[in-house]
Image (cartoon, rainbow, N blue to C red; front, side, top):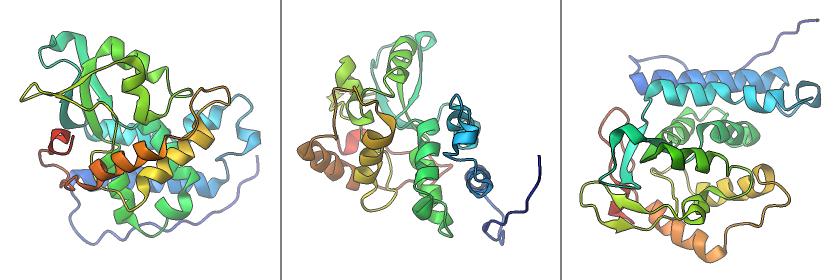
Length: 233
């Protein structure tokens, strides 16, 4: 196989980086390299969807390597659940998040590293649920928008501290950028969901409701305890 030289722009390291920044920058550089290689969405690399799974994987790996249990939202499907039966579910799939970043590279893989770090942080947010529920949720990637997965399966959500039931419509945990929520779900419906999914785009009224909740979240500082979603649910 012949080789060629590609160039990518990466952030200048001009200060002592936090643990969060190191993991986010690793993911950033890896995705930019994949994009520059020409592998992403290249039919020669996707005879059996190999690149579709492997290309976004560095993003997934860095999210899990940064914090295996993620950044807790303070939400759970059972405030009295046995910890041995439970696990952490990422609100937005890091694997799918990597796909999103690659497809939307003109916005998220540019010279705006700060924007990418906010996307990375958003993908780290988790909810405490049963392992059996987590498996069911992962199986719904191609037929149900993320926003409706918990509702579709009838999985309730509670504030883990107050044990009060909250809305189980899924929204991001932290601010990424204006319009992110609509942009993500339009992309998900057009690119991720199968053509035979019973869902089209999320209902406009649901988007508006979710956007209001989303915009009320206070952005957290990585490596510090994260705020609970119950504040705006």
